[in-house]
Image 1 (cartoon, rainbow, N blue to C red):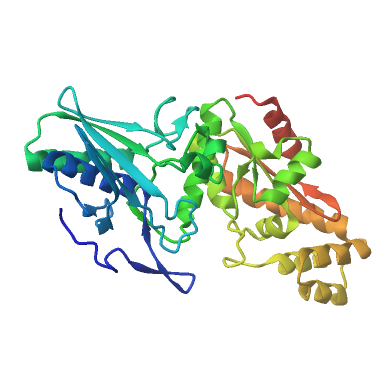
Image 2 (cartoon, one colour; image 1 turned 180 degrees about the vertical axis):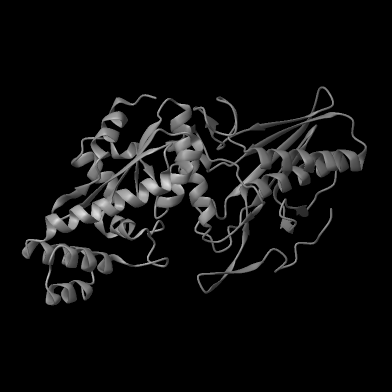
Length: 387
């Protein structure tokens, strides 16, 4: 086999948020590499301790082959996932490939133990199929075909990919929410894991909404996190677990909803996150912008607050402190009215005419602080659960 798996060959360094971080490789790369090694062992009848794989990104990986097993008409092995410096629940898992000769002259691919099954429309594969996405499927089949050509093999080859711990690991992923049951997905578009990848998060948001739309739900709630989910359930009477978790990506979530063809989108979130929308900030991570106190101060001034109050607001550390100052000064109502007006303006500007969009903003101490004009109508449509 090509390559020798020398230390450091798989360690690309990237810079994220002024930190030096190491890339990793995807479950798709592991599956393709394991399949390549297994076919080589099946056809050569010799052990393969290392394997190389050229990823779609153009990076060549040199990987160790583990858990080698051969028998009459089959070979099996595993490649261990390395997520680099990305916080990934699949880091360190073994991805197995078992290959055997079969009738015909084609390569067949199936998911085994620990690989999820598709149960909803809107995903890359049809209902009932193994959750092996299209790029990893192509990588696996191309890796097997490469070895067939190398050894002049005309027989069909059956490939089964498995992850023994996959079902347990899947409970820590978005798979249950997406309608992927019984295991993890084999993923990857480039073959390489970028640490702290924003694209990975926004891709999941897009996919979650797409699944909702394909299964008859064109109106949905989006929450930045667990506070929003809990508030939906406890105060608004809607199951918060059904909401799309959009994290800090408000703008991207709106864009995706428009692209998918959703009809309505309601954001429900804590004041600490959503107040930033009043300034047109569509990524609410503190690294991007922190205009919370500036928003409160500006709108308090518009509501007639004196200089001392504005100064106190600018010196606040938390939104709870700012809300308390406004409440004590009799300014909370008028300030939140103009804040919600600006939130409404900015999210509607982002959405355009094809998507109804609204927001409900709350704090843990007060409850609902404000909502945009269309919020109640959108929530009613969401509760109906129809197209």
